[in-house]
Amino acid sequence: MLAVETAESLIFQAVQTPDAAIELEFVPLLEAVDRILAAPVSSELDFPHWDNSAMDGYAVRYDDVATVQADRAVVLEVVEAIPAGVAPQKTLQPGQAARIFTGAMLPLGADTIVMQENTQRQGDRVTILIAPRQPGEFVRRRGGFYQAGQPLLMAGIRLGAAEIAVLAAVQCTQVPVYRRPKVAILSTGDELVTPEQPLQPGQIVDSNHYALATLVQQSGAEVLRLGIVPDDPTALQLAMEAAIAQADVVISSGGVSVGDYDYVDRILEELGATIQIRSIAVKPGKPLTFATLPDKLYFGLPGNPVSALVTFLRFVQPALKRRSGLATGWQPNFITAKTDCDLKSDGKRESYLWGKVTFQAGELCFSPAAGGHNSGNLINLAGCNGLARIPIGTTAIAVGSDTSVLLMQGIV
Ligand code: AMP
Ligand code: MG
Image (cartoon, rainbow, N blue to C red; front, side, top):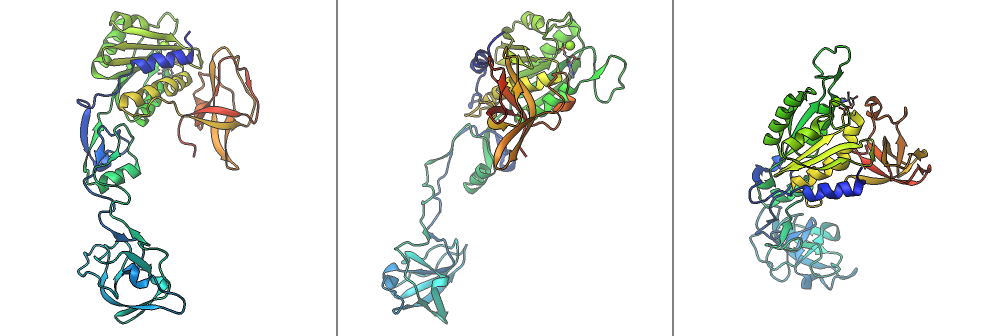
């Protein structure tokens, strides 16, 4: 039984990051949402593209208005109005101002904006009532936010709303992203049927397929649904071979324990895979096979529904992040929350107790699921969003203590 950290490091070393030279594709902007950028992006444009006004008001020459005081207003001639989106036509001469609006280009000659609240307009004249605090006030300078040619977005970031907006702003309409890894999902077991099939005595529904497909999809990978395979060595070998041929990563559930019908490890060996992990000191989830073939990864997860889900989140999800090209990829999604109950374990394995993380009076709080923590009980996992971690060697975490929680999904 490997320590969790040893298992993590074996998996980490085995996972290839994508090769940008061959695993890159270009997708339109809105198809790039949640994808991983595969090449750095910069822009030939400065941001802002030109000096512009941060206020509705008047563009002026600072020297004309620097002397304004309560009893000494300055009157300027208004020579044009510049709305956003229109290029100024005039160059300001001494004694002149231009009416200007937020986002509009500054006219030549102007260096400062006076906000309209500090002015009084009469016909083609404007009285400046309050002096700007310094030259350049309320001017957004060309290149003040970003200078052309600087690196802007790095390869390996996940593209969310802000990054998609930046890509749009720099007119990158075909976004270079990594190809999504193909992940095959296979369920093993003579007892399994699909949700559509009538249940005969002794049979159960293959729920792992749906849990794993959801998790793989949420990890940003492409799901290949390979269905149910009976506990028959020949059928299983064919199915595993097909899965390995089609996918970058294969995830099977079941058949990795020590039962008479647990064939996965043996078949992997026959297929020439290197088995790196057979069991990990984690609860739930002890039997877990991790094997490698050239450019392929194989995760044989335990069949127990809760074990399959926990081991996916703890070991497979970080691997998929790294395989997807996420530069920060690897970290499992741990947060810290205060437990509202005592948490107990036998201390022999790293243990996970499922429950709900909520905000309570501004703090993250963990409440274990009612009804205990049986790894065969899928039902009481519904409604949970986190797994509290009890480290190996620790037998209790007292109520009110900070606890590390592996997030299964968002907190709200
Ligand atoms: P195994 O790891 O194959 O020994 O299975 C352990 C337990 O998980 C057994 O009770 C199985 O019936 C159950 N199980 C295995 N595969 C699945 C699956 N795909 N969906 C739901 N339960 C499963
Ligand atoms: Mg089985």
